[in-house]
Image (tube, rainbow, N blue to C red; front, side, top):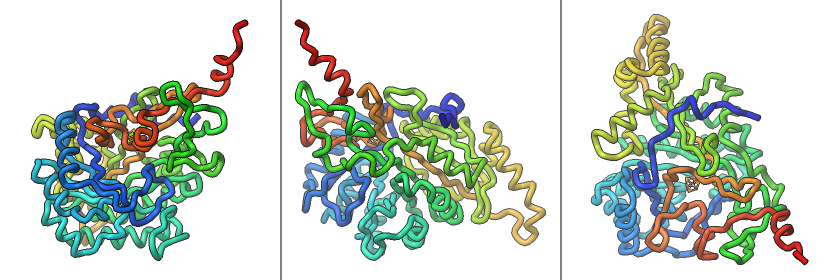
Length: 418
Ligand code: SF4
């Protein structure tokens, strides 16, 4: 079994249900394209009113100490009052971050959103979307779309720019090339997120029954259900790391969130490195991430979501400070300084930080337990409560989360006793 990295060598991010960098706001169920890996059923004009969005934000604030609000959906740009929503999040003292496919993101809207207080944008771009003009393109061909967005976001200035992509069995081999593209554009791309593909009944559609309370339900009726066998449903964070290490053997994660049922599941796996536009010099270690999270919490009373680009491009100062307590940063700085003589025209190019987050969403275990992300950052609001956004459709359809029961166990329970 692929066991790298060992979670015990990494920093366990200090996030919890009540104190977490992120809240996940869904102002709309409407979307303008279809993505195969989406967890949400599309509802035409399924927008919440401004009052409902405000109430959701107040619910978050009652339950969770947080720094940034991921404004998702649906696609949040389909909401006719998205600029007002961004301004409202900012006025309440949080960082608004849009999670969008970008299809409706015009330059004019981007400037309006920035003026309203937008801090970051995460663009979901992958090859299993019905993106107009880009159907049937490979992940590598889609780097052109990514670059167009990265340049447009950079031209507006000081907006954090991230990209995410769902990783399927047949797109896993492209991950290193997408990462290579991101590294080349380290000055404009601040984070890249790879999310392993999942669907409602996991790998157990044929061997498990699902229940809500005592009632058997059909997970196949949920929007994120597909026939078993179409794609692997158990790609792990470690599988993605292994694929990346074929191209970058030194790729070294530093921090993680474990699973609710399995301590060694790497549900959120964070890697951060220091580099210039032409080269990555090294990876920050667990200690650097521990200091960064702790320092931000001590200073601001919150864990950090989305460092601003103006901070991330100060890689030299960060490296000098970080090298005093983190071995990984010390190594990166040493290589950077050691190679200065080989760059006579520009001995000290600007250094940047870039992060890779790998997400391994809900896993159904063989005994029916759901192994969720411990301290789930992407909790959303449903009927006044915080709930896993990836399983919201279960609540909407059945009123509660489903649990799995292996078929053998169901059969055992049905054996007549006399
Ligand atoms: S448990 Fe939370 S963080 Fe993990 S996939 Fe589900 S919504 Fe996302």
